[in-house]
Image (tube, rainbow, N blue to C red; front, side):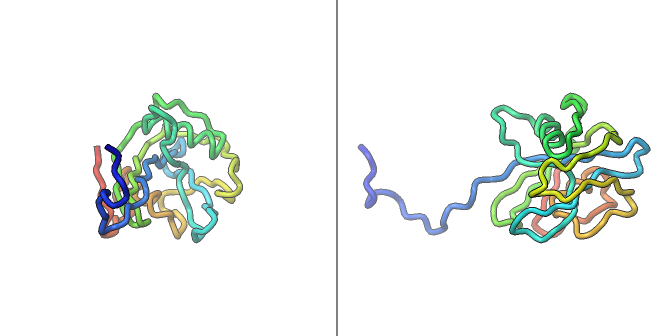
Length: 163
């Protein structure tokens, strides 16, 4: 029997957006004193600084594979997924829906980064850990804190799980 509109339950709260699952990629410099960050210029959001990363949107894709793919798509830097290491995950609902971001540490690299998505990034730079610019995109700051807790504090409502 098919449920008619009168038979369907009424939801008191409207459904929330689907969870966003992704990875933020920490690419340390060869000397370990800096990281790769980009000037984030995503439409509808205030400009900020961000690590490479994005959604896990390929069927069967792991966090390490997501990190390697997104790094290559966004910067042209190709590093093997097998050398990526998940440090932990961060869960938040601050954007109005659940967002789960894996903190993924890539092998050190000073390879040149290219702007391959000019609609989302105005340029890539390597910055020292003691000179990270502000404002930092929230999930990127929280991912960095999974690697180096001294780099950022987690705001209320953000939950981190280190591996």
